[in-house]
Length: 209
Image (cartoon, rainbow, N blue to C red):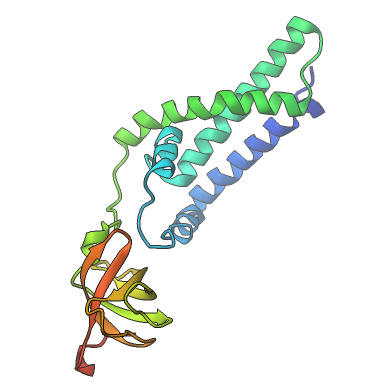
């Protein structure tokens, strides 16, 4: 069976993509892409629950994303090409490209997850800037959208100790007051996903824009 047969197309494309990633890493552009893709979730915090379990299962986060992707592409391409060759030898013809890609993907995902575990254990760790929700308490926040009232929170921006912006929902600590767009408040407590803040009386205590 020819390596360039149409039934091998998904795997050849995967290996081409792997070569592109290797080129990006050699030229240093891979680091730029990694940095550009390192963004916070909408509330600026790490996801939990099902999302966290899924990323753990896939091995995401154990190594830089481009390394994880390169490993997955290598596993997918290798499994596909070897599998198609074996099937062609056994049955006289390979599987169609679609079925072969599906089966190779099912095999490559868990294999890649196993492969990145030891790799992640030996790779140097980057310093994380992820924080817990409670770390935002006692920090300044600026009301961005809407008016915060008791039972009706408004969106606010808060800067963490790493200088990163997070967007949270804020209600006034004093139920008789309102917090309006542009107000700077001190986050004094948290209940679930909602923070409670008090307005600064002095403009000198406002949040730097």
